[in-house]
Image (cartoon, rainbow, N blue to C red; front, side, top):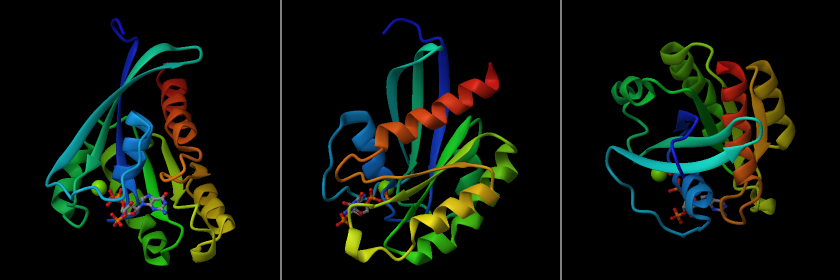
Length: 173
Ligand code: G3D
Ligand code: MG
């Protein structure tokens, strides 16, 4: 693509193993692998896309590489982020209980920039520990959009990224 009209930095937040890296790969390359090596530091991926009304947009996607527990890294990671996807695993309640922590970290660093909540692993229907309604009410309380996804089947993955990017653009233009 030629020069993009907009460049947006998006961060993925959430506990280890919720599916952050899988969602990024599904979105950027439309693939799913059963195992992603836990990389140190940060994975940076780029995807160019067209967003209705805004034309060409370059999304810079930052994915925590296995350092989710290092609070000291969060600030650096979040610097300059235009928005974030906050992800929990629908089959693991502990990851849902940690959401406040992630949302607080983001708000501390980036104030009122848009967030979108993702309940991932929706394909594991008989293992669900957190019902969709609970995700929905957390999102409402925190003034964020909400969507359930599966990085495995591809359900709603593109929709989630595009929804966040659109919300960011609506806000900055
Ligand atoms: P992370 O980047 O948040 O740490 P990963 O999470 O993307 O590494 O995913 C952690 C594990 O969950 C991986 O399995 C991955 O295949 C699996 N996973 C991610 N998203 C989904 C999904 O939507 N559905 C299902 N069924 N599994 C998913 P392993 O076995 O490698 O630990
Ligand atoms: Mg990862």
